[in-house]
Length: 223
Figure 1 (tube, one colour):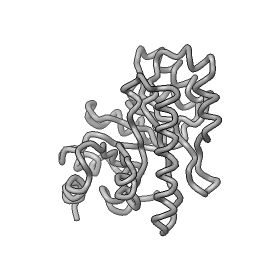
Figure 2 (tube, one colour):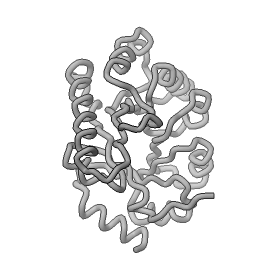
Figure 3 (cartoon, rainbow, N blue to C red):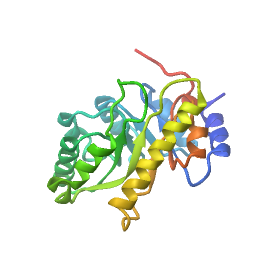
């Protein structure tokens, strides 16, 4: 199937209330343009240099999401254009994002990434570290970031009930933070969970944002 056909199929399955982030990492710009011309305007990347290179070439109305582990010393390279950083996993990183957003006179949407999977290799906060971040003096003084919700990645496995349980855990974290910190903040609304192999379960469990690569672009290209 073509990229256009893949997107058409996905749009038939994904509710209008759920944002589709097309994960374009490792994909050449001509394939991203194929998706863009088919009406897809939101893309996700996980490598700073690759994202910067693509952003320069591609249309400027694309909404870019950074979805990978972000090093603090790389934030300045994307701060002038990034729309969402979905992978905030420390106060140190959030401080850097706020500082670079301020230098660029911008507001950057951020999602707090939670570790919900069984794999130790995945990054993310737990409940207590998220509370420490949100209770900190540094966070209270930030003016150039907007906490828009939470993100998490489920365990890579074939058991749908394991995945479902982890998505429910992330939904619980979202609800907890909404009640404790963001009850009067309508911008705190995003629950980013679900990828090509598990987005249907994620949507059933309340996802508002799915990050889909393979089901849009087919198998990835690796150098």
